[in-house]
Length: 277
Image 1 (spheres, rainbow, N blue to C red):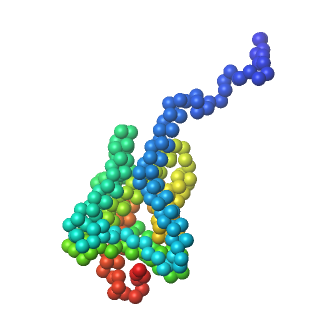
Image 2: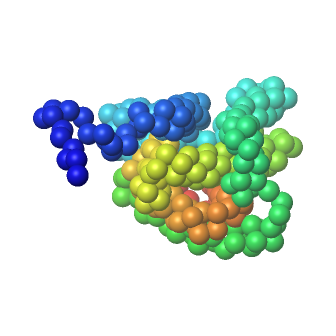
Image 3: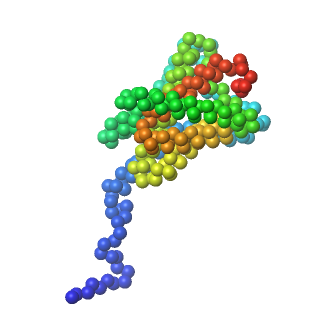
């Protein structure tokens, strides 16, 4: 029986597989990583960096966070309602371009576009029913947490809207709420968790990354905004891993924002428990 002799320092005949041994798989992973970075850089990743800069500015501003305001849905052309409306619609439409990009990328992948993330009309009753239930729970806790954080100086005073009293005010607020919900849930939950899973991330790590991202682009509101949305990101991520549908999350987020925007427009200055700038 002939015995195999191996010279010291010589590579074994069957070395363990490495990334280089699978060039196609390695190239695919690099492509996916680049894709994720580009999608985030064009959307909520850039918003996270912008919010961080805004938060640093608020911290270094004389006075506490509670004495400062974070304004959403403000007029883009004061005194010129038709031009203002054009700017509002332009902002809503362009904010949804990253969602269209994700749909395109998923279609090229052969996954069926946004249907792969559970954003479709297959289960409207399920999406709206569970969306309303989640909105009631998350929204109620969120309002309480915001009021507590703002009263204790951990949050800026959030002004959800300061639009002029014109006919298109409430339709634009509702459209803005829907835009926020579609953008955030498609990108941060459906798309990001799908891609991180394809890159080999454990579900817990992917969920944590999505939650931190969600909290980061709300830092402009203060520490309370970061922590509250971090918790919301964990809950929404867990629900997506259970349901594999962003439809209920889009519905829940839209309802939360509609109540916040429209409710503020109706109640600001009329009740003493709602902080205003």
